[in-house]
View 1 (cartoon, helix red, strand yellow):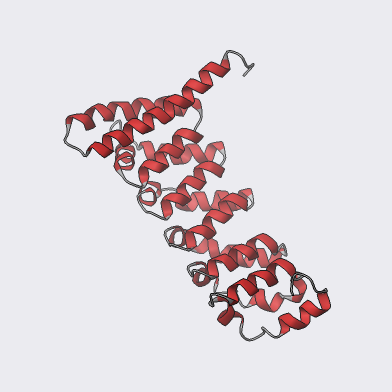
View 2 (view 1 turned 30 degrees about the vertical axis):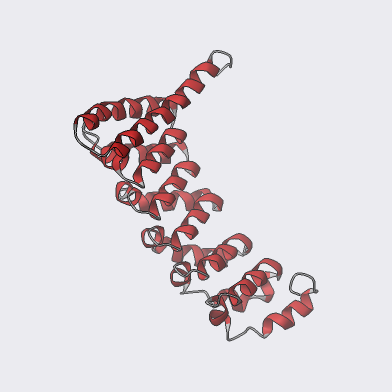
Length: 247
């Protein structure tokens, strides 16, 4: 009904939800109605719904249904004041949300669809914890999104952190061996510039020989070999195209 009736009827219908917004959001059926309100009804008619979320954004983002509702708000509410309030609450808890089984989707949403300065703010808050985050099931997906949607400088910041400050490249070694971290390394190999790619590949290869000497599980060696193949395939593409293209 919300999809097809006019604004006046929408307003009447939505008014009946007043006082029960949170109850609906946390309900497996009700949350779909709240999402539909946010998608279909003009924002000036549902401000009481949006206002109910103020101060609750983190709690909702870490809820199986609430996280969907917050994503709808991010998509459809273009009132600057509303956006500011919602984003401020998200920004205060970026690291907590990134590691949460539901909150990570909200952070990924902002990285993918948010404004460049919002993306930069998230990346700078995660910086310094990239290796730790990469070893976590939910946060590792957030780190991958940072690499996919971050700008060249932001990406470089993350790559430098993964390489570490010594020739041992301890962070990279840890990540290559990790069940979640190795996917982040693969994403690095897909997204970094060619210069970084050759550097990282050479570092990975050094460690592969060491890995083979120790009795690490076969799966770790094959994981690292897969990383090398991923990277070399990309370099192979770039070298074969560079001769025929002007770049």
